[in-house]
Length: 186
Image (cartoon, rainbow, N blue to C red):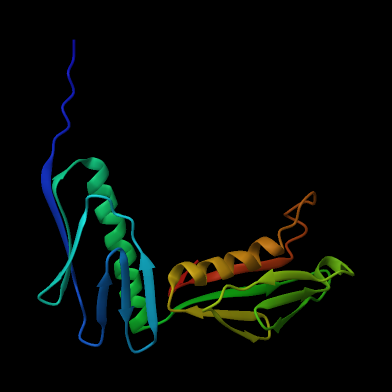
């Protein structure tokens, strides 16, 4: 008979708050304000404790199992992304590629219209989340936002809208593809 005992140890993560950033904690909602804007998010942490002390955000649990450690590390990564976003916006670049039919992309409010994709008469629509800025320059579309997840979702929406089904991908390479993710070439 084997008895498995969960090892419970104290675990803590600390995140430095930069000079130009202001952090406010209201119960489970964390608000971060910086020179680029304001970013807020709700964290349902359970028994993980949040504290702001000595210009640091402290996440801790006195009896942390593997599950709590993973959760603390994930929340830490989200908070670092929020801080980075209010200091400098995240930027994604997508490229319009076509070889058969020249397509155009037009921006109308919070929706983009892709016209003449593979010669289709009905334009395809792409929804753009609130808080995302889009700039179209010839075949490059620049997507910027203080929220990394919203910027990534907007770029993915463009890519999914031009996904080609039931055709040979080696021949029909038309579409809109992500070429740059928040400062990294792909």
